[in-house]
Image (tube, rainbow, N blue to C red):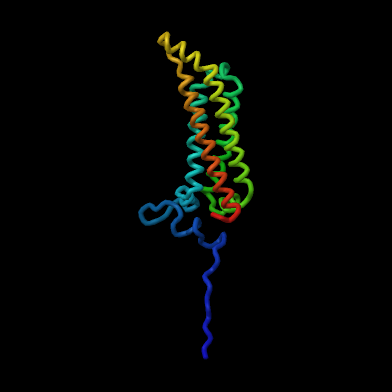
Length: 193
């Protein structure tokens, strides 16, 4: 009686093709060849990639608005302005580095995402953005809104109030996005995702 041989498929590892590391679909296809095969484009269409892109774009928006419209009113707003700018700069830089590393290496994404770093980082970013946004919102409404009303009645233009209002609203949204990313990272850490 002949014995049957059961062959198992090879396990996915760092040198084998995995779900985010498929060697056949990496890079950009131009004519008959692929270029930029070191770029992990699949990351951008995953939920983690979309969250990181949102964090990057919204953080960039907040920082640009702060620098462009808030510097003249920084003395009126005070510590709330500098606190929000510091929060924005710190988490924007780190998110940019993470997004760059995850784009270049799928292995880095899996290693960092399995550690506690992403959970702590995203949780801290959520808390810092929400607290900086609420403090900036308080300062804008207490110190800039009366000046805005005076300029409005005299026919002048005071663009800092609407811009800073948009900044603290967007900061709250960024904080919520980081909160969602914290939850997703925690589920990934515990093996649910």
